[in-house]
Image 1 (cartoon, rainbow, N blue to C red):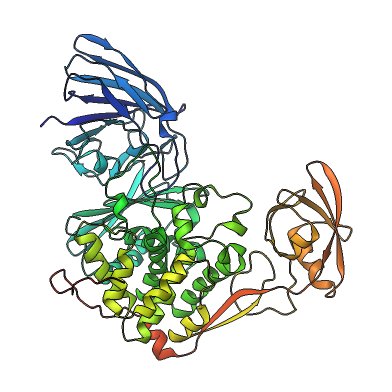
Image 2: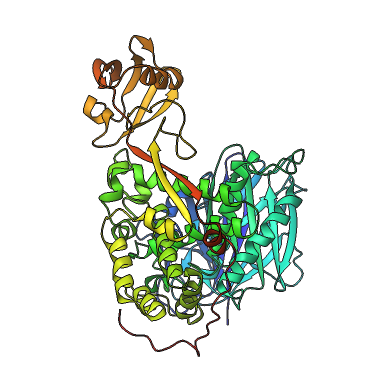
Length: 608
């Protein structure tokens, strides 16, 4: 069977150009449609990658062929039923794990953002040849694509994919690379870094291996088709993010997220967040890349694909990413609870917590969650954060009955992932009913998802041996920890400090800031006659008695305004967690023995 072949060549580092050559034999005499994905799986936003194509042409052995734009994503090619070569140039300067980026230090190439699909040939084998980068003799290439015979590990040359979807699910990281690795269940796990300096990468390897082992234990085994796994780390001055792929993840991180070799025992918040990001994306190896909403079994990459299940796939992943760290012994119980408290505080302080359901947030991710504006605090709930709290509450309910979410996850993995069937909108509720045999619990959890209810976190945490208390916030950044001295004052607006004052970025409805008349976009320049900055604003609030008023001066679109902010007590929205029952909490935070399930031993599915 003829394959579809791509050739990548970095044409101009300074101009950020990637030259792509696509070769194939048309399947018939009809014109061929070539299309670029509009979005990349795992990131639910239309990105219109075709806009970065700056030139395109085609030819065969007889000469130039006619190729013209069909729509904003596609080109129509007329041909002579002979082998065709299409050449095009892509502008690559998007500092994101979802696109393509080229500079003098690194090249990050997502085939989803630069490889055209040939209609009628997407199921055929695909080849990608990555050419050496001129003037960069110390650069190498890392990718989860299968290496063809003769292509060395981290080498330039020929890579293979079974089909188009596998090709676009395999990012490439180019640059001066550093690599470590470890084996789990006979599968080599590579950690590759571009841009890492003064970092203890051996420590990352030692810490990451047990975290991955916890995720493997949760699901019972690695996916049967996984032969190697790649953590592709793109290290920059300031950045954070990750995107899951079939046998790899592309991670964007800041230089100082990695551990300091001079402080081998330090577990900074930044390093902990990085390990949690790795844990999150690795969990997706089972839970999104293989077990997924049934609507994603066949991706339609030219338009949005809707599902109400992102709370289940992203939210439950977010629950287990930090949990794996404490179960692996990387963090202790107090560190884990501090992280959990921050999540609870972020969700609880936003008015959106009681205004948008998780099912709705999942369905509208394309236009709301991924395109948040200044009103998101009032209108958009995070299916990541609140979804993780639903998982927490469900785990608590199950453990109180002698069951666990761990075992339910393994059952769902067999039902949705091993089977290859994915999950329809009702399937999780059927699996929960099947596992728990508790209709009341199933309906309770379903209401948590389908209605914008405030979750019973205090009750749930008590079942996990943890006590939840609340206090007021001393600042917008105050999300966890014990109460500080002095009664905190209410404000209810988010802001960024700059040399001119405090730039208001969002205002929570019903807050003191809203009552005072503040709006997103306002530049607060003076508080009680003094120049406004983050430090003196909080100090002014704390020094004025409850019931008094602070005079605010601000610019609103070049207009100077004066407002009065009433000084009132801050609402109780900061979570404080502590272990109340060590035996119960330890059983939860340590790796539980899982109910080993197989498709043969699962009982018949019944309706929820």
